[in-house]
Image (cartoon, rainbow, N blue to C red; front, top):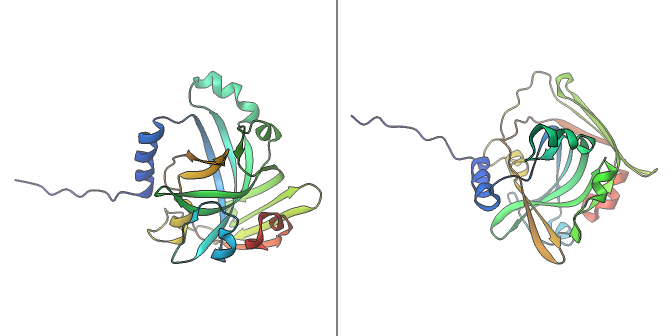
Length: 234
């Protein structure tokens, strides 16, 4: 007797892992990204395309820009085991804040970083020669404690430009993977980044399990930092 079986649906994360293994084989570095905050904005497609050198990918005909704040932990090379992880400890923790949008290149969906701030000065010194990534140093303070129902943060560049934000949601809210076809899936389930090196497109690929997430009410108290990111968020 034949017993029918049910295949689990193939997720975007599954497809990304297959693509990663086929093209990269093994990761060069590993890390943990904890308590990530995304804030999404619909923006003028034509205005955004003027500052993005790749074809925009649209959600229901609309261009999207996201603000992303998170802290990276335990960054270290994949090889070398515990000794290498210990040697990498001085740069293993780094706070990030980036402004990114969503693009497609060579048939592959991905992200393009419009602007990005890192908290660790050493990481700025190690940028790859000729690689056009918008890295800047900034002071960041994150209180991403979702258990309290309130997430706050600030990002500062120099003495003037700053961003201060907060997000709230009901305590006890369930964190679940993004629903298929949703805004959250469109923005969070991305495993490729595109940039340029010496006028040639280059690709960075990553992989992780689908992030559990929930919807929050987001507010910006000071948006001065965003004036440096181009016309679309002014």
